Image 1: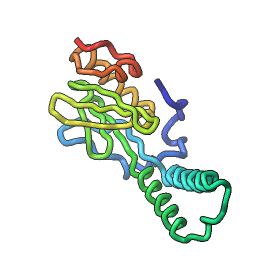
Image 2: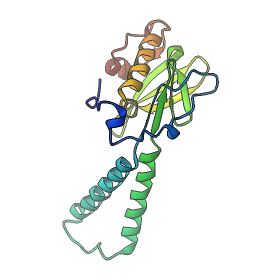
Image 3: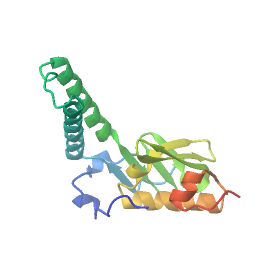
Image 4: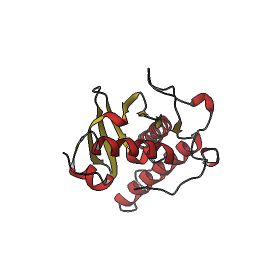
Length: 184
């Protein structure tokens, strides 16, 4: 279920920050961080500019190709504010994984101890809602997890184990998209 082609080694992926100083610390009491993904400044800038251009084009088309809205400085301030917000949103996206855990931001779960594996779609993206035996919850985009093949592999192996061996509760979307067996 890979959304994108393998980008090769992290060092050759211009869309990611590979600085060792940016490597996330593992959750307390867990094994070391094996792999991590954090968007680069370059990728965040391209994302923000792309959205800015898209919104300007949308406004232009939705206004019937009229330019009477162009002189209003408030529109431009709002658009620039939106672009800056999207830059920081893209730059903040990060995830990491160890042998038995996956983390997005500060939230994490033990993937071999999942009790609930549910999938939902939000704005054309598949999101996983994971709950482990310790009650920890993680809501994460599959696209973000798949930004690094090793993170996705570690996460998916734990999800599959939890579904098969632990009988984790799943929903229809999770079973269908992740090829998981039915509950029980």
